[in-house]
Image (tube, rainbow, N blue to C red; front, top):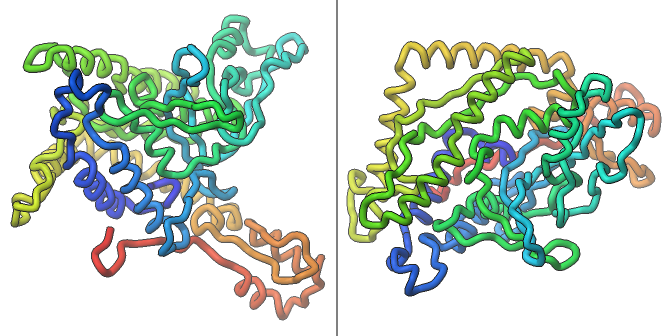
Length: 422
């Protein structure tokens, strides 16, 4: 929502409450009797799909009364977004591999040890999901500076490369949240009609994607190009379930998953990396402060409840809000926020040194040429469009400002509607 739909935080919270009520407020009644009902998950994936489709319909660049297929891939020069998932192929017995679903194209920078070119390291440039992602190799380091051990470490890391996947936004949301026991896995057919099976990428180290995001930047732009990293945690409790209670087997499974997905492990790695590579790193989190289940939503949805004090999910939302407020008032937290804000404002101001690029990123500005005989009909840089009108169409200086204004369009923010619909 923040990246693809460019939503503000307040609107994101409104949408979250709607999603949580529609999905977590309606658990399946007989979920605990899975041995009778088969491979039954706690929540219906169809509910989550419906809610996300509704958000996409209302929050995309141009609101439509019809249910359009809003895709994740986005236009050049705007905010880049990726989510993590785990992917397996139904026709193979391979283990699940990390799969990044991107809104942008990403082809790796290939290292060439000893001047030799390894053809097996070439990216898969097919459109859509690649059936077997090639290894993530080379991060822009030259072969002279990389040791053999470093090159081997890169070569054994498996990740998908290529063009942005042509997934709908709801598919991306489902792939990234298909947590075992909670939601059914997502199946998507690739160009060869093979079923690609996606499950929640948060059930491993990428539950904290900061390290993966840093790798993306260095692979795309080379070493030393990481600007500032802001990692926002969930204040999850750091005590794993003890395997006791009414459902000990389930509790043990949850404990194992929690240990494997501990976000603080990546946080410690990022602290070390930021010091070695000298980039600002901010971790906004209060580990262990929020001791509630992953899917808690209390009280559950009911048509019998009347009054704001009994609103669906009100107790859970209040618990989270109180926990955040307590943490945010601490002196150390205030200093952290101040330092982070100063760094981000400094970088935002520096971007203004390139006005056309900043205009594109901040407002989504685009210029469309109106001349029928022109084969260059769309520009994302205002200066380039101005030169185009002068050189290609010989437009006089006196007419430039009016023509540029007429041909310019920008992102239309889709705020909450007046009828209360979120």
